Length: 230
Length: 307
Image (tube, rainbow over all chains, first blue to last red; front, side, top):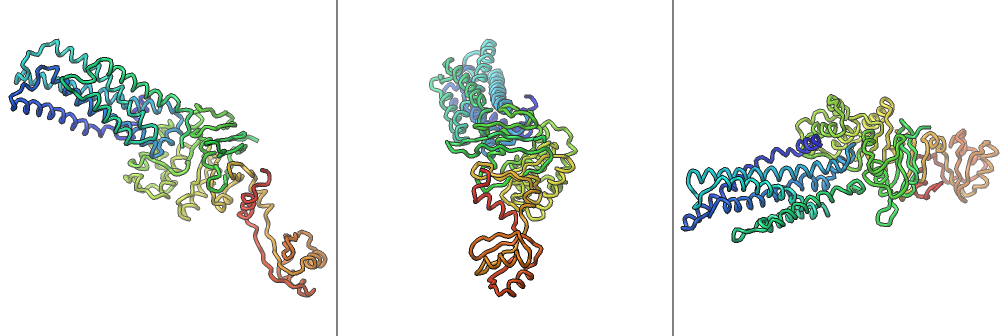
């Protein structure tokens, strides 16, 4: 399996995506700083506390990487079907399930690692900013940080699972557009925040969406061995 | 006789239509099997079934003595193929594509990459992405990919599509070499008769999903000799004269005005002379080589002899 994953990475030169990831992270920093400075100039308190700042940044991060994951799904799966190179893959002495599992694992692992590391980066920067410039009106405690790590880990896991949901729409007609559009929709719905509350804050929603995503991934590969490739 | 590929009543139904219907095909080890048929006859679907890309609706496939099931992946190691249009990872070079192919098939003799690229005359394409290749070059690369791991069986769907005449000749030699030197078994489909007849040992003709004929090339060659066709206003007299005066017995009266002489011991000149002397009017006399093309066209148009 590890070898299949390595070959996929080599085949699509996936490490070249580091540029996109870098730009996205710079974007998050810029986004958060912008909110901070604009609000402050208006005489408002930009972030009431650490948690609020983290909520905003993790929503941005989630949105970005759900869409990023959809781009990967298109590249690794939908495009292979469209260009018919999946036929070549299926004439190799490797189970079809294994081939597709490797691809889905890349998507899930990528999303998890990216969400986790980007949120950690933001948390670190916020902690640093608080220490240096005292950006929050309330004191930032160690417990806040620990709690945040737990929450982030859990959110990253849920996001990784739900990143497979666009597969449901994309695989039907092997459509790149359907995949990306459903990802944008999903990202918007789960991240729209009002009064510091979004769908992701209601614990049942990220859990069920994450499980649903994994289920879709499973369904996409469960019958692949019986299917004709035309 | 050992058959390396055997199908029994292989059938594929798409939306209620039998695309491949009850095909029982036997391919001997080491032979070149030419698979002929018009466009849309079911050649590609049949070959896809052999590669497990398409699952049969009915019937069975036995390759190397093993029955093919939806999960017999190991068997695929022993088969190299080009199905329809050769597909590659377009942004990669020829070498990178072959390298990936070797990795996926579990073949680690990377020196072979240069060897096969040389074999199909693609050695000087270094650094060029496959998307910039012509159809002919892709076809060559397709063959290179199919043969690099030295599989026992080669399944080639229209491999000469898009090749120039020189390329076609090179491929013909290559296929013969693979069959003779490496003992590979080749199943080659085509709708171009001329190509198949030059290399195939056995020919299978498919029409409307049915295998209507499976014959050895040797047998067809014997069956199909040249003949002289004669047009006259009195076939009976002609028949009488050629059998009595010239002693020819192998001829056939086609209709009231045409007669075909299969016995080639008398030349056109001799026949003409005999008939003119007897005052029989000859409107036309032509020598024809009843080519394989005619033979197959007759089979395909006639719906088959043993269908």
